[in-house]
Structures are given as C-alpha cells and as structure tokens.
Image (cartoon, rainbow, N blue to C red; front, top):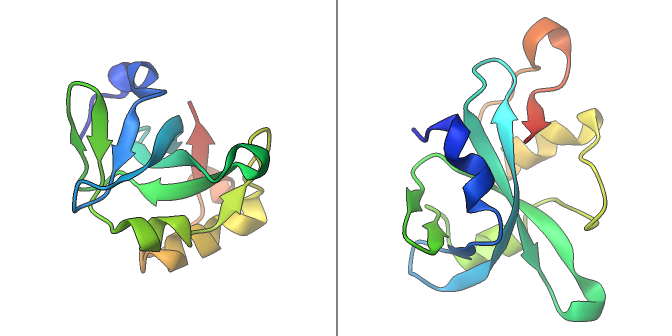
Length: 118
C-alpha cells in the first residue's frame, strides 16, 4: 500500500494501464474513510472540450518517477463511472464505482461516505 502523506505529489502524473498505455493524468486521490489509505484515483480523460474524471482503484498500482501504473486495462478504466472536472462523487454513486471493478462495497465509517478526496 502507499504512504498517504505522499499522495499530494502524485497529482498531474501520467496514469498508465497494465500494458503501459497512457490513460490520462491523475487529478485526485480518494482515501477509504475506514482506513484513511489511498483507495481510488481520478484520471482526467477525453478531448479538451469534453474532459471528465474517471475512477480507478489504486490497489495493485505501481508508482514510478513520473507515472502511476494501475492494474486495469485502458478500455476498462475509460468506461468507468465519471464526474465532471469540477464535480464531486455523490455518496449514492460510490457503489457503482466499486461494482464497475467488481469490488465489494460497504458504506464508510458510521454509514457515511466511503471515499474521501485528498
């Protein structure tokens, strides 16, 4: 797992898929509110007039000098649930993010939000 205090340095890095194909750039890191550990990242994708942020799990990711390589294929990541560049993930839409990657979903601490943006 990654050190949570290093995550601010990841913003803007290229995100590569499991085949080393560039997906986009890392916009933000979301931590699991139960563990306070990095859990998902948002990746800026799309053409300049239609950019959006897609979610990708950080489990199994590798951090390099100028990149973050995730354990998923580009096509799978680009079809993930997304938000606008200035958007926020509503609590009601957290579960579909987990489902897209076939990950178990549980609500966060106290039955609230599971993912918190850092």
